[in-house]
Amino acid sequence: SHSSSSSSSSSSLQNSSSNNGEEEGNKRYEHERGNADTRPLKKWLEERGIDARETFSNAPSSSSSSSSNGGLKSIDDLLKEIENGETVLVENNTEDTPGGDVSCVRRVSVVVVEITSKSKPNKKLIEYVQTLPSGATRKRERFLSEKIMTGKGEGPLEAAERGIREELGAALSPTATIRIDKNSLLVKEEFATSSLSYRRLPTRYRFYEVKAEIEGLPVDEDTFASEETCGTKAVWKWV
Image (cartoon, one colour):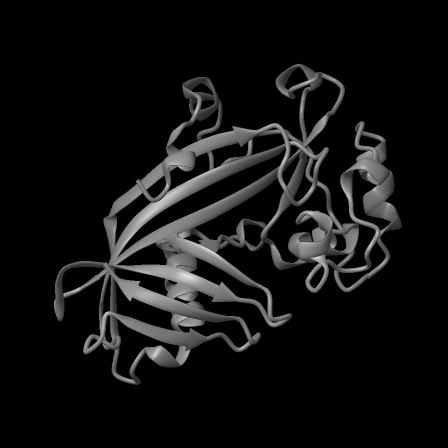
């Protein structure tokens, strides 16, 4: 399965979180919009048991250096994720946190989109290889996925369409039609004690899966390329 990691969820965690991944009454970290000072964020985390030295890369931003430090990101990167709405930090009871000494959790929601096309019967679209603006390449071999801007109130269906338009970019013809099957939406959840990006920060990932049918993608060949406005390039395959 393309998302085997997302389906190995704990039933107790699924049951404890029914309202979009945020329990009622949990205090959320709020940052003054447009303020690039990371000191309030660092203070908030350290008051809740997160050691910044063990958690973050020292680089100011990891977009170009993450490959050299094992994928570890900086506190600047975390602040950008919060401002974009891709990450929400909430207070958490220490007994709910692995290790018991940390009282906050990073929530990240992701939608995975299974794309088909009538022009490519019995085939599904996967992102095969991704090339970052820095030139670093990574093999993906999975369906299109997009972080949901839950901090800005975005839902999984909106994020799926945004992800399709952003990631497939100019590969979509001007007359392309995107049909997202909202009835196919599934919710799965997984809890990781820490993420690769922020070593000490407990992260709860919520995965959504949805099906989409697109007409207006290249179908003459089994592979095609796309480029996002940010400069990220990808090779896609019909499999």
